Image (cartoon, rainbow, N blue to C red; front, side, top):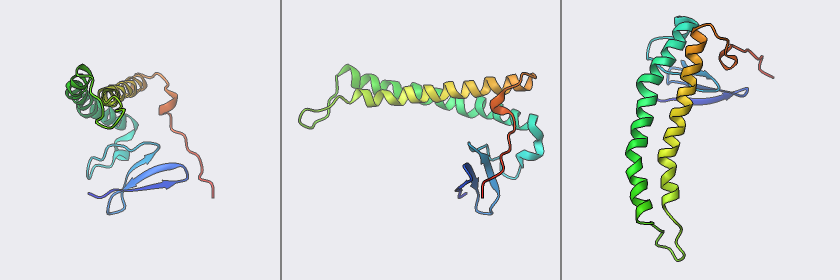
Amino acid sequence: MQLVLRNRGGELSAENERGHAVGVGRRLRWNLGALDLRSLGRRGQLWVDILGTLIFLLPTCIILAWLSWPFFMQSFLVDEHSSNAGGLLRWPIKLVLPVGFLLVALQGLSELIKRVAFLNGIPVESLEAHYERPTQ
């Protein structure tokens, strides 16, 4: 499937080859094939986000952080340097991998908490629908 990213009035949207939008807003949403997320209603969309976060995002981030940790540790323990003259340390950039995946997992956990709170009736401002007319 080919996605085309478009910037429409400050909002990012992605369309597949048939021109169907798979995401609108400041972030892309899950594409469930033929299932139109708008037909699920607001609660259904939140449940899709919760399940997607629990099944895909968090396990993937945790596994990738876990697998990239030995890559960093090996470099750190041998104090790996670049082979260039006055070589820079290599382990700081290798630390970016596990830390980055852990930060994405923390953001996913934050989004998960917001969606569960919203489903329990607690108002969450970042999940409220806001429509702004596009400037022309």
